[in-house]
Length: 256
Ligand SMILES: [Zn+2]
Ligand SMILES: [Zn+2]
Image 1 (cartoon, rainbow, N blue to C red):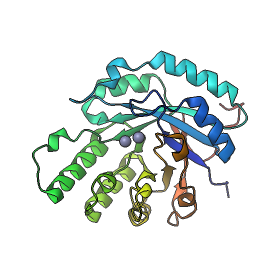
Image 2 (cartoon, protein in one colour):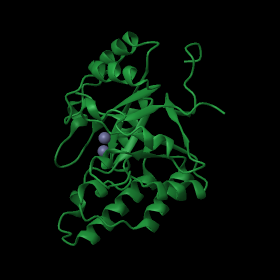
Image 3 (tube, rainbow, N blue to C red):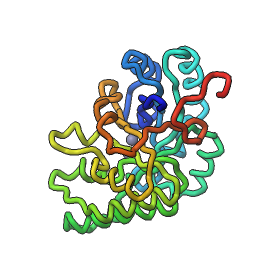
Image 4 (cartoon, rainbow, N blue to C red):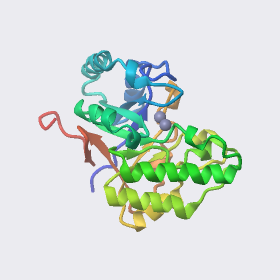
């Protein structure tokens, strides 16, 4: 059996509007933690609140990535990706990101302005679920980001388990890997997004690969809940992405 990869594929650096951590700081910490790989997935959001695509320093970030990658060669594999908000609504910009040949693109619903005016909590949550479903049906991305992120945002969150399972079935159909996002666990008693039960459903309908991601915005959050990796439902296998391709082992230098 291949060794289960220790990767954190959802990490925000100072190229995201909401983080100040440098790639070098993360790389050093990842090496200390003994991680196999981490992926920098900075925000690309295009909505009425912000447009980080328009001002994103693509070239500078790539240069910095190459520099740090070289510095930490042999210690930890560094990967470069994006977390794209609503990729299905921005196909042109998403195609541009693809043209840069990132290791992976996470698709996430961040912009909920379409739900403005829905006062009822439950109705809002179900409408949000539908946005995630729509994105999963139509978007070009590799990893589904925090499928039920309202779990983290609403203290009184009530999930629609069946609908979430339907979205995860859609992941199976489209070959999208759902991440198990652990950032919700920073709130006491809140499970991962999605929960272990939902991941078990994903496996039961043919899904196999998942990744366990911290969604770190500060250094101490990197791979904050490593035990989650060991407690995945039976049949779920950890994976990584290199050059947009799913893998369960990191390529050796001669293959890369
Ligand atoms: Zn996100
Ligand atoms: Zn994120």
